[in-house]
Length: 470
Image 1 (cartoon, rainbow, N blue to C red):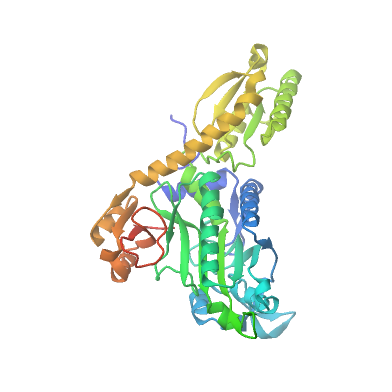
Image 2 (image 1 turned 120 degrees about the vertical axis):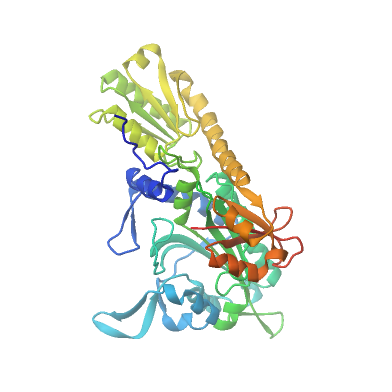
């Protein structure tokens, strides 16, 4: 009798495969309140590495980290009508505290434009205070009706950047810088996902923004996932909160603003972009554990050698874990590390010790081969870079192979059954977009004819990327 697979095969049931992998790789559990999640240590390790890489890029772009309260007076949200209307169905509102009814209900942070603008209006007085570039790492709550771990949860973790500028052009350029130099660089060169950078349509734009820039990734089943967004807010919130700065004379001017964010949704994107029927595949540049060195047997000489190899790799700058838990069967440990997607396994047993070799198993490229122990510290960094490049290449090849040019709404819907459609925005337009939405297909973004981000919604030659989305 054939052995049952550890995971439901992707081709059989992709959503079930996704949930199986989260459970078997010990990434997360469902929380006690519907829609919440408990992120387990290995899953949180992935998020920590994302934080580290993102935080470095955000700071390089000039933003500083701060923290704002998670409780927001309800009156703050009502100051920007479009914003509150956009978030109203998702709000969690606290009406009682300390055993008493509150004089004013407070909203549990769904996003922080309103509370941050309350303080920006105090902190910005003159042109010398600009640009003001703030980021915070926090949790937010949006009451999710159709939860899915990492992808859509009632509470999730994220970073949200908020900035104020003296001119429209400065704000526009900064939103674009975050879009490309922070998010685009991270997702392409660390996550290994070949995201498309584009511009949202008015229908898909963030509530309260004048423009939203997005990064869309194609998942393993051909659906799209919005991986991150950067918004131009214009002067909408500045006018609502009277956030102004003094010009050279007595005249005052409203600031121009941006906001931008990515979340633990990226963990879900990582799983669905790179995972296979054997589990997760973690890009080496992201991996909290790049290499695991496994002792096959509990003999003293073997244990000493795996620890020695671990020390040598660590000295070479590799993030390594030594697995010397020989009271647990080797096969089970190997499968567990494969499920977790650690890029390389180095396996050492008595026979390997005698030969001066170790068995090198590559999770991304596949295959196992013996290598000289003395060469490991020299060759492992190069192998990790090869595997990083392979994941990005596979992501790009999948997106290109499953994106087709279409001319009609029917063709767009057909394309979205297995991948993405690319259609002229001039031919589709808002009316066609609405018809697509009726069939569960959305315009993920607009791109220029040369694949770049268009400057305006109605730029001549704009193409709409359409897909079913998570």
